[in-house]
Image 1 (cartoon, helix red, strand yellow):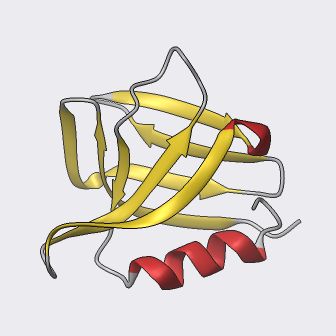
Image 2 (cartoon, one colour; image 1 turned 60 degrees about the vertical axis):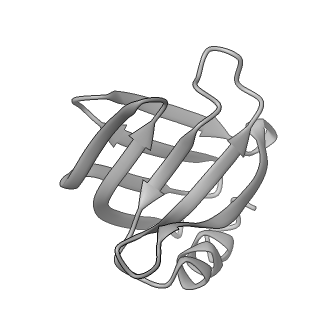
Amino acid sequence: MKQYKLTDGAKIGMGNATWPLAKLKVSKDRLEINATIIGNLIFQSSNIISIEPYTQIPLLGQGIKINHTVEDYSSKVIFWIFKNPKAVIDEIGKTGFL
């Protein structure tokens, strides 16, 4: 089973966890964001509407935005990254999750 893992930061609702306090783990069946200080989220592929590049401040505040249908989770779920957001989305796609 192919997995993709990345350690960086996350924003869930109004909470923000900077690097290295958030972990992204993706497999064919699920996407997890573990940001212990602000929350842990688990998504099934059926919960995901889209994953898109997100830029708050070019080069300093970029990430991927998780658009989802889970009512109990904040609508604002962003995983901050130092890598190219499109490259990360491609890696997520290679797991078979999308």
